Length: 277
Length: 68
Image 1 (cartoon, rainbow over the protein chains, first blue to last red):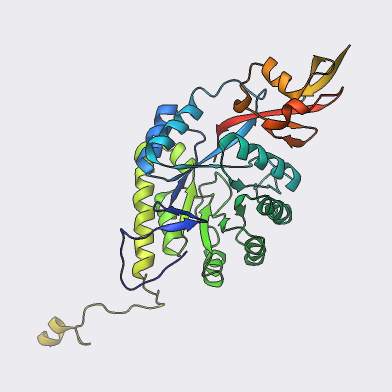
Image 2: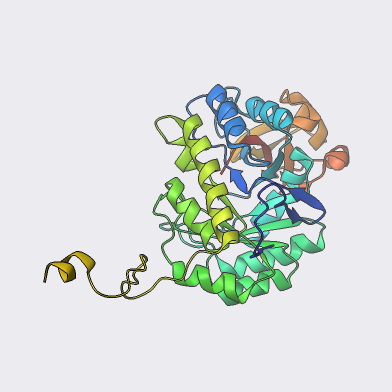
């Protein structure tokens, strides 16, 4: 939930998904890291409490070179939870079946629901997404829907029983930051009680801080850390940026002005020039 | 008698009356290591022994992987 209080208490700022209380507002993806060791270290440096994972066909490729074991070890060591996704699904039917498989494999009712509607942008399909979300909620899943920043379709997902929304900041893996701040601000203002997590498109820690300054409850990212020259320090940088943005939101960012507003109270006349004349 | 199923999209011969549980074991997977679907429908681990595969069945096996 969002909060905007006069007294900022950084050590008492938890949030919830269902009956689960979380303190970290940084959700981290696990794909594309240079090695299992770096992935594990990045998870630790991020201090994340939610780590995303996926599923693949057994014959699609060989082994995973120890990445999944590294994730499980890091999750255990850091007290984090797994959030499996339905990446690669193009229809509600596919996503529902994959979600059931994920629940069995990872032993969690949490599912990051992805149903893509466009191959070029990997934009979520709002219609298939709603169908899948509705069915999965009825089947007892806790659905984290990866969605666009469209207000009305977001409302429909919440009405269907999703406990939160995960609107995109920009296309997956693009690193472009928040492409439509107006739509994101609108979501925050029109859904003040909803938990909103920016998912996808974040490229730099400043992007994540921006999302948090807008009042979003958390940020989920992957490529920006995995593709950094040094993923572990970058995970640390994102953690600090997300904490800074959250603290700034709670402290109240000043309203922008069109023109200059003098900050030093000199009272009108330039003192030195006035004295010389 | 033998049948041919589509295993992750590839032809795969099997003896007749083979169950899904038997197939998973024959492929070297521990029961908890994979998730299964037959003809596009999820089959829970506990029900694999009840599913006798028919000729032409499309079987998918999934395992954990990294993900964003």
